[in-house]
Amino acid sequence: MFLSLPKIYVDYKPPKLHKGRTSWYVSFYVKNPETGRFKLFRKRVNSYHTAAEKLAAAKAVMADIQEKLSLGWNPIVSNACPRSTVPAVQAFESYWRVKEKEMEPESLRSYKSYLKVFREWLRGEGLSESSPLCVITETVARRYMAHLEDAAGVSPRTYNNYLSFQLTLFDWMVEKGYIPSNVFSKIHRKPKRVMKKTRRALTEAELARLFSFLERENPEYLAVCLLCYCCLMRPKEIALLRCEDVCLEKQAVHVRADIAKNDKESWRTIPDAALPAFRRLRLGSPSLFLFGHHSAAGADFRPAAMATDKKRFTDYWNRVVRPACGFGLELQLYSLKDTGITNMLGSGVPVSFVQQQADHSSVAMTAIYVGKSPAANKELQGVDIIPGKRPATG
Image 1: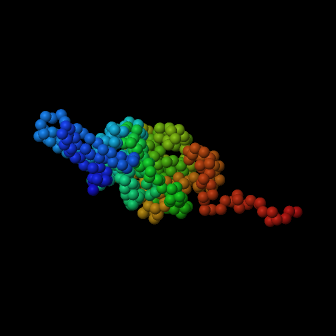
Image 2 (image 1 turned 90 degrees about the vertical axis):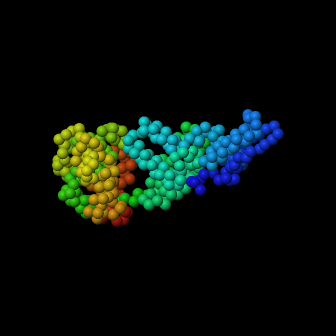
Image 3 (image 1 turned 120 degrees about the horizontal axis):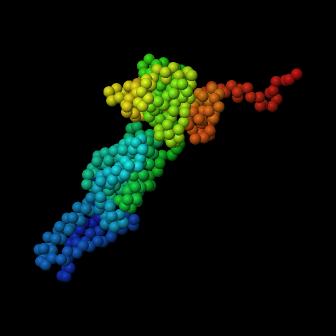
């Protein structure tokens, strides 16, 4: 069976020729997807003079109808959605051309990846380039998501991301008249309880091991880690920094509005202890990207005219840093930001200052990290709130 193409006598009944005294016609039945009942269709072949001409015309009509039915054509759906017989690949490419004009590069890369995975799976299931979009039914949608669920490396969070893309893609198909309804709409997301973050903060010993290793092996990547740990910046923002954004005199890093997650300009303070690492950076060419793209080596993060991809940061972490420092999977590059926030709050830095450094939208978001430090809070240790236990006074 080719993907979930219609089954003969289940989803449709093949065309038949009916010869009457005054009229010849071809009949066929198609199941109505809404009611589950067959509907009869007729096509007359009376505009010919001889029986031989009528028979030849009828055979051609029957062959055409049979071919379209076997590929998933359904006149009931086609009447409601005139574009339902458009090849699936053509519909995907139309969607992609629209999104290329609307989306930011970062989101576009994610969408491109999701669409590529879906198209490769369809091809693996036997979907030809010319198959109409209507062959992608709810059954196909469920099989695809089941495939992702079983695939190695697809976490519940990633599964939900794939599902969000499919919902967006097929909502667009509905809007443009390709299909009557979204075939992914009845598939449920993974619940939040199974999406709990697996990463944790680094201990003091792990931080020392990390910084010591990078000071020897890769000073540029050390600066990447310090921007995440001390300046509480996001990998995407770090990847798009230019040399001119680092101001050693002001001891600050400029996060431009065009690279910030919330589209708002901000300045991040460089702590005194981190300043020596930033003084070692090559800042002589202001317009270059601070951590540039170098095709030759994945460990090269020197300035360049082309920005690097944030994925190279995580790739280097997984490929080099993790084995060298003996880190488990729960220690990720983004763990540094969690660790920095936790350690700043634990060191007594006011939560409003940490909120500003982390570029959080509210104090409440920053306050989530309060109490995550494994060390006891010295101020709370000295609180005297138990009646009858206060020391006697003179």
